[in-house]
Image (cartoon, rainbow, N blue to C red; front, side):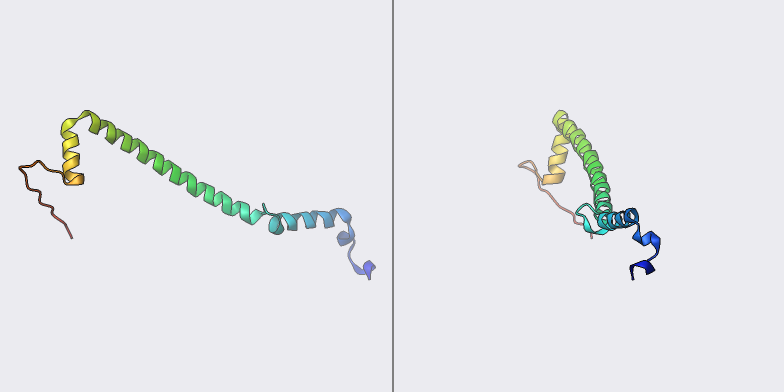
Amino acid sequence: MFRKVPPLFRNFYFLTAVFFLVWMTFIDSNDLITRVKMGSKLRSLEREKEYYQEKIVEVEKDRQELMTNKELLEKFAREKYLMKKESEDVFVIVEN
């Protein structure tokens, strides 16, 4: 029965290589499928990181402008937080 198997499949090195490839592709905790998913997740997180770094720069710029310009600070407080002076009325217009 063992003689009917082709010589290639009786070769120790071939069998070892096939076992290694199957192990590394499907069975191991760091298998190929998991590594592809993790690479995709890494690229997604790097894009998110770039987005948030750009937002941080933008917010820091706005913060610096607000801290140095009193009129801009007052405008921001009025628009964003609906603050007003004691003698004023505030009307909020909501667009559909």
